[in-house]
Image 1 (cartoon, rainbow, N blue to C red):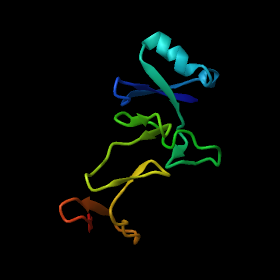
Image 2: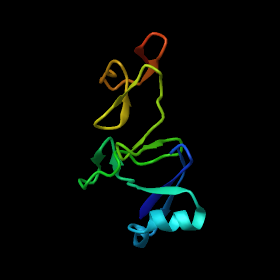
Image 3: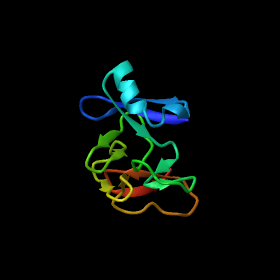
Image 4: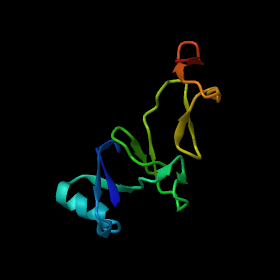
Length: 119
């Protein structure tokens, strides 16, 4: 399967489609002609700049509706979850000001206190 993301005028993803592998190389141009707008290929197996199957990572993250395509980074960037979080330039994912505890409990970020709290 090949996957393509359609972008709006602000480079925000409005939809992602899956098509046959035969469109892998030509899909961006083909879908621009068929549906209009700008289309960018995205990799279902890429997250945080790592290809989950050991292959070559592609555009840092698999695109999702609401993600932004950054031309300079050639990356799909998810929406910023909280104002205090900063973009990790390597992964193009958002990072909390402090790391989430790793103790097998469920935590959620509290923006007011800038802490992880047990859910």
